Amino acid sequence: MLTALEIVLGIDNIIFISILVGRLPAHLRDKARRLGLGFAMVSRLLLLFTLSWVMGLTVDLFSVLGKGFSGRDLVLLSGGLFLLYKASHEIFVEVEAREQDVPPQTDALALKAAGNKLFWVIIGQIAVIDIVFSLDSVITAVGMVDQISVMVAAVVTSVGVMLVAAKPIGEFVDRHPSVKVLALAFLVMVGMALTAEALDQQVPKAYIYAAMAFSLAVEALNIRARGKRLAAVKATSPTV
Image (cartoon, rainbow, N blue to C red; front, side, top):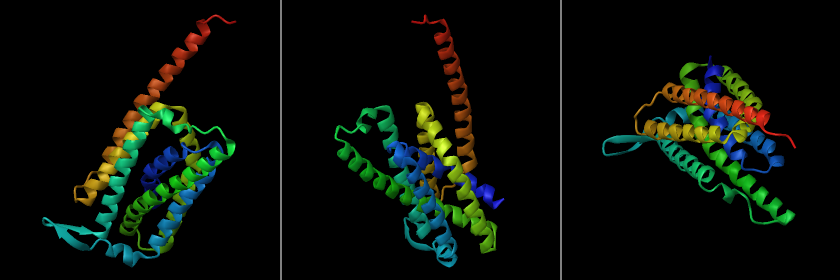
């Protein structure tokens, strides 16, 4: 049960990694996925082995206007705001400024240097959001299970599943720009939910996942319809 829950909680992590990795040159994408998910597993395991510190994060550090803020609240708030900014920026790039992704340099060495620089920038962004998702995941695990060995097994298994699923999900998102925009909108909702949770306003994740599943189902029908129309056009167009 914990493994299944960890996989569900990792869906937003996979989507975030897949979208960021899609901006890299093709030869760097697999490496970025492995590093990103590897960091996710390491951060979860480190948090599991420091359970007393993690649980201490739920203690209020200070209060503002009668609302207490704990270490967990601060992490969720900063992570939620970062996710809102990053997802909104990626939506703008995808919808309005796609051509800016293409670097103006034509020199091979310059392109390689730019790709390497972007690689480490993206790894850094993945690392930041991994910490936020890991904290939520570990606190959930602590609430369900008492044995550290069970928690470790669930985390390792879930990250293994995410590692297998990340590449096909990323390739599917890259092939369908409309799905990419939907995925970014999903990350905006997750960012809003994290921010609301930091302010003690609970938004059930089941609502977010249900809304996204419905949107993806509708988009799947649209993709199928577009494919049929394209096949019909090819069948009726004259051949040269």
